[in-house]
Image (cartoon, rainbow, N blue to C red; front, side, top):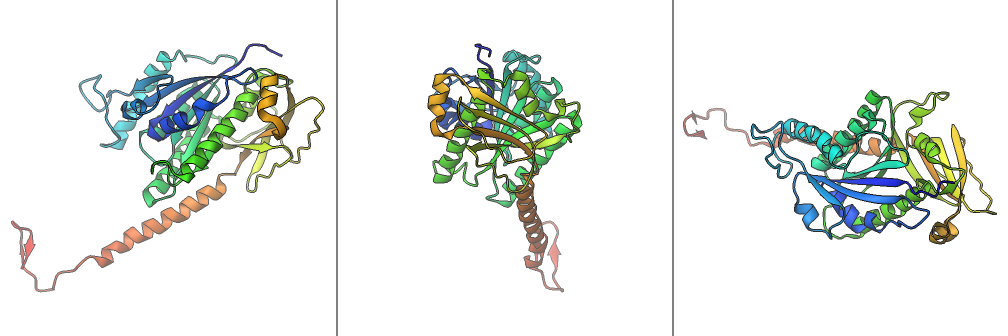
Length: 351
């Protein structure tokens, strides 16, 4: 077992992710038996970052494609989306250089966090994930979906589809920890708190798996879990794979095909894992701090699976189809002018 702890580099993309770091991720344990966490914020404005208790550092996206004046700040997510996306993409190399991420390092993992419901956060996460996959750097995405409106539902589905397309193009299997919260931007609500609690608990478990301080599960085991395309003897289809967390022997995916799994337990505890997977490995927690943190939750399981988001996509597709039909029919409710109407073209008024 390696005594050196691994590191998780967290990048909060946009306002929703800034809130998640402030309310959840900064409380993830960094004791022995857990990975070290390093926090960064990537956004077009400092407004969100300046409203939280400072943690980590901030990178502000500047205009590169959308202005002749290179170096001007971008405020908000308005304007042409294509040009805005180009601005973000062109800032990614500068950001990665700033945080000294130029190549893959053993024991260093990246966690990208964003809302999937639209805005600069989703564009930033997609761009960063694409570049990290291109560099073969292990990356996991935390995405909060939103189906509270037709626009946010459409954006959520588009974000997931874009990420999947990027993974397929890179011939990678991209892990996504996905949650849906329709009220993430509506202040401190019960739903928001529930999502933050799930993220805190889930990333605490993930941090233990990635710590590099467990017996029988090392960095290679976890890199293969994060990106299953690394298996040369198993033909895993590139695309998005869902990350899920399971306590004790309760491993029920519902919809989905489990592909890779990892289990952590302690000496003397039996493990009953009831899913057929392509690759499975059991490791033991040896650090007292981690054992104390998990307590009766052990053994705990990580599962990567294909298809778990299928139900979510079907729901979003149904919402989007209904919204499209409503928009199409809205023209029928417009007030029509009489047949003998006269129009004054200069005034734009009918008589």
